[in-house]
Amino acid sequence: MNLHEYQGKEILSSFGVNIQRGIVATTADEAVEAAKKLTEETGTGWHVIKAQVHAGGRGKGGGVKLAKNLKEVKEIADNIIGMNLVTPQTTKEGKKVNQVLITEDVYYPGDNEPDEYYMSVLLDRAQGKNMIMYSPEGGMDIETVAEKTPDKIFTEVIDPATGILPFQARKIAFNLGLSGKAFKEMCKFVTSLYKAYEGSDSSLFEINPVLKTSDDKIMAVDSKVTLDDSALFRHKDYEAMRDIREEDAAEVEAKKAGLSYVNLDGNVGCMVNGAGLAMATMDLIKQAGGEPANFLDVGGTADAKRVEEAFRLILKDEKVEAILINIFGGIVRCDRVAEGVVEAYKNLGDQIKVPIIVRLQGTNADLAKEIIDNSGLNVESAVLFKEAADKVHEVLS
Image (tube, rainbow, N blue to C red; front, side, top):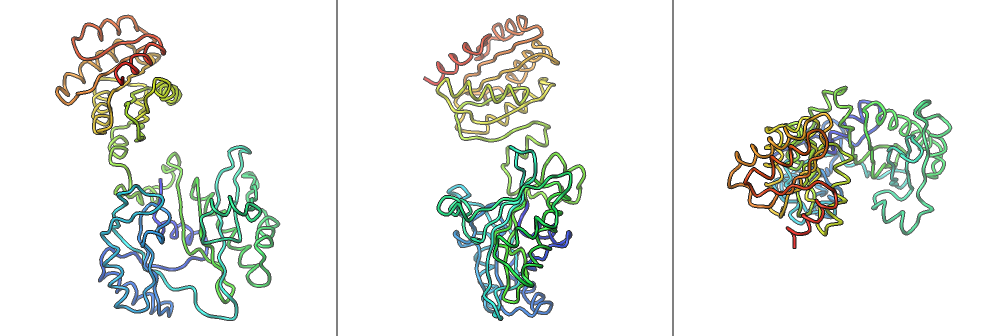
């Protein structure tokens, strides 16, 4: 589950991470009031207006602006709220901005020049351990840094059994070229950041930039946080942060129906039970010359109701030219799945305008094939994987 910047900062702050303070606003008038309050609390005269969408590169799309007075705060907020923000990480249509974050200006003058760093905490799957990735080149696309100056990307592997150790925090601060007060502040920042990552059951914490202010404070100016969905039962307060306006409508609907669904860009809809079989089915579609339009796992109870819900989800995608149903009847009997397919097909009536290939293997597979073949519907049955692939190829040709 992805979070907005302001939500990620709330979590960071709760674990003692120093953050750039801000207030969320949904209207231009609220933005002005937020700016006034920040001025009273922090003394900041300028404010940064940030679009709150689940996408990086907001500044490149015009979603991050500096306001030097309250008049500019209102004008900028009014322009950003409601706009479709297009960034390198959105579709060409962009994402609608429903709210903005009004933040304090932390690039104030002082004895030293401000400096920016990149830092993220994530899982190193190869080693089965957590990892802190960091770079002195903050505020830039980390992919560009990795491509052009890979020597400026550092990693520190953290053993989950021990957590981050003091020498590791010091090593990170040293590699970032810090000393004195900034060195100590960075050690504290890194330790608190890792605790936030671990304590919130996140799969990613990305801070870009981490800022060293002109008076050597270290703080998170931005935050990109992805929470582990499987751990949300332990964090009901985090689960309440979900913004379904930022998510794919079909995926939200599938979640409510208890289906595992991921929307893709292909032309063949998939309805499968089991993640492994789903991946194999997607490979099958590719080999047949098609492209999978979705990942859809109906689970172990592929009854008529779930099959109908799955049909509805797949058919909402106008790019779908065919549907491949590939069910293994281990827990569920194939004949019951076949009956469910026929019943769901009849209930949907004219909504189904694309050919359907059904491959059912397992308990009562022969009986299931008879049910499909004798249904009189525009449904073709297959027994072997290759046979299913050939039928997909035929309907797409």
